[in-house]
Amino acid sequence: MQTKISIIVVLITVLASVITTSAAEAVELKKTPLQDKLASNISSFYNEQIFPGLEEFENEINSQRSSDNTEKKSIVKAALYSALLPGLGEYYVGNRSKARVFFAIEATAWLGYLSHKVYGDWKEDDLIRFASEYADANLEGKSQEYQDWVGFYDDIDQYNSLGRVQDQDRPYLVDNSENHWRWQSDDDKANYRNLKNSSREAFRRANFLVGLAVVNRIVSIIDAVRDAKRSNSEIKDADFSLVGKIKYRLEINPFSNNRPVSFALVARF
Image (tube, rainbow, N blue to C red; front, side, top):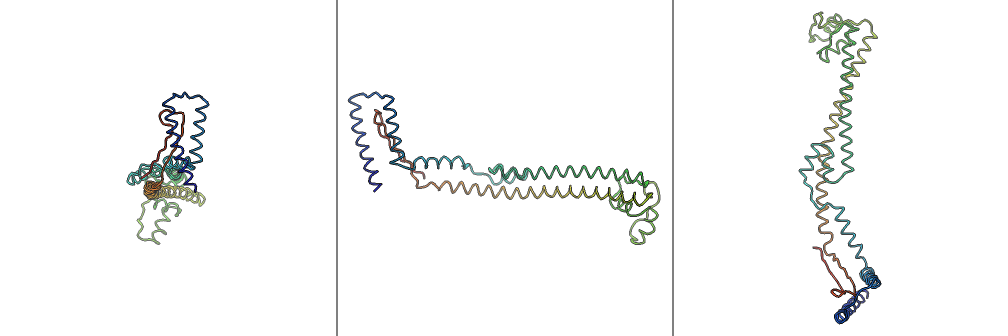
């Protein structure tokens, strides 16, 4: 029923436009502000009442065009960007909030690594100075295994006697300026071990944060590739989501000499 009424209204409108055009050719009509307002009201009435939903349809198209980046994203670029800097691939695809998370993890990992590395170096320097002052030991350039021997045995003699009895593969150390150590008390040896453990723990945490940065980069690459594929799939679906929809517009202006009635149909394919 509504369709029949709309068709009848369109026919009446076209007939009225013909009559209006003939009259306009005989007598030149000059529009007044009141006529402009009347023409605008008539056009708005037809667009909103006779053809409801036109404005919503246009808004749908505009919002979809603005929200969807119609340019497809390169999967290779997304992966390379994330390999260069975790989160950069997500930023390229358009997932800014997710990119900020990867940026934050990357920054935290490297700042944490630098802080623990510096702290570990400080503690190692304290360890070398402490051993030199309280055990007369020279730890410059020595291995971690040697540092462990100094922290476990009271002096080099105890190492050569008890230590080599338990493990005969250990080298015999000649008591000279390079190998000598002798702790003055058990407390000093305990403080040395605390410094050594603090330095080792700082280095372990620094290495863990390097691993975290590597994992963050791998996860970002995988995620950026998936986001790029998903974005391209959504763009492809959007290309067909409006197929079959028709955009129409009817404008009525009885005071126009050229086009008193304008009716347009645009089909999206």
